[in-house]
Length: 323
Image (tube, rainbow, N blue to C red; front, top):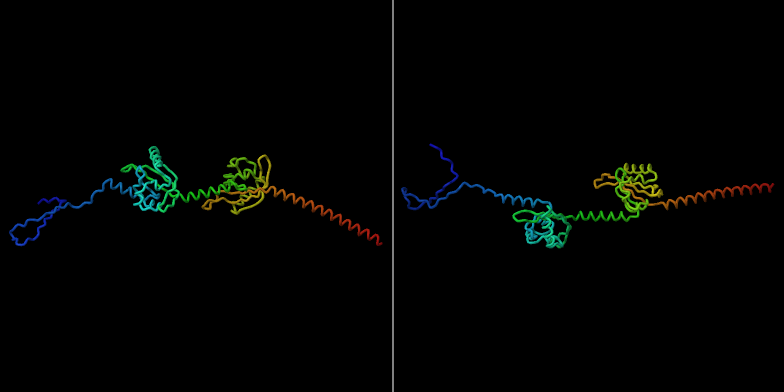
């Protein structure tokens, strides 16, 4: 007997027991159920794409807001909730101009126009939180081609970067107005930075004239300067000593030079930092004082010798008179 091909269809007749029905009486089914073997519905390409989009959105490190071309927020990720201190349900009722402080329709118009030609736009602005506070942000804007054209705003909190930049600016300003000369040189003693005070100290009109020059060439005694820098690099101590310096036009000054290693955040030595204080007048005053002291000492010794001679002469005369 030929075997029946297995069917993907199952038919079930439901026939309840009826009272009074004889054995020979045919029982009619009340109903029948035809069921196809169950299979999971195939996912459409749209469903898969939407799922991947949501997974990508939530996995982004930056706070991300998606808007329509009019700036109405349509989607956000959890980082946006964290940064802006809003629930996603509240953010999707807002416009991007409520998030970017000081922005208006003109910003959106500029972004739309720029993104017709450029892949993305980057701006720095302050973003507003739900509690009324703000934070500095770098915002990259892309145009997305989803079901409807959309704008995607990637927001990165740059508070730490701004604080670092402000600190660096303060330090730079302090170096620029410092009365002491400051020089930063690399491991080969080539100058990377000079402040205006050092340039003026040696008679240069512009600090840029000294950049990439050899710091050792500015010392009156190059050999002594080489030994000083070598010792600093070897011991990593700060050394302070007085050195002669060459000036433009052949002149010279004396400077008190403080030298130390220049290191990065990991402690790696990048070069040297030198601080110069002009002590020429002090040295001249000291030389004059030493000269006066030497002259006075010589005069004192001369007078003392004369006094001794006079005393000796008096003693000799007294002896002759006594005889």
